[in-house]
Amino acid sequence: MREDVHLPAQFAREGLRVRKREPTLRRPADVAEFQLGMSSLSLHGAHEVAPYMPKGMQDAGTAMHRSASQFAVAAKEASIDHDVPRALGALTKVTQACVGCHAGYRLKQRSD
Image 1: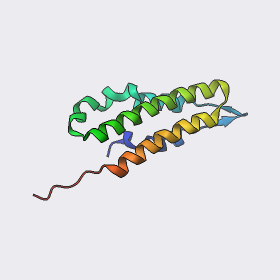
Image 2 (image 1 turned 30 degrees about the vertical axis):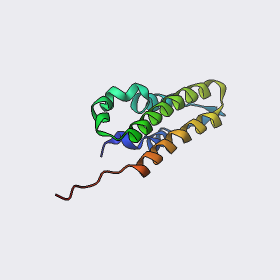
Image 3 (image 1 turned 135 degrees about the vertical axis):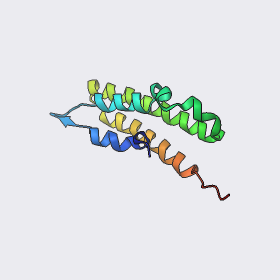
């Protein structure tokens, strides 16, 4: 399995480190944007696999990539304005998109 599939766990490992009440969310923001967000599409070869996905799965994937980019923005802003709850809310949307897609779409082994 590819390492880039379960990035919310990577965000947790990178940590929402808070030192002296100041969040350091720049690294999780970069991970989100460049490994999962809209900037990562060419990295994943999304344009190559999208034609093989049902329309609903394509839409869910696009929504997830967009929510990851929105989290990246919220996390970078939280590094400045200390609005960690807003960044966590944006991260929740990424996780919900992942869970929703994985719940709705699964690969089945061919029986022939």
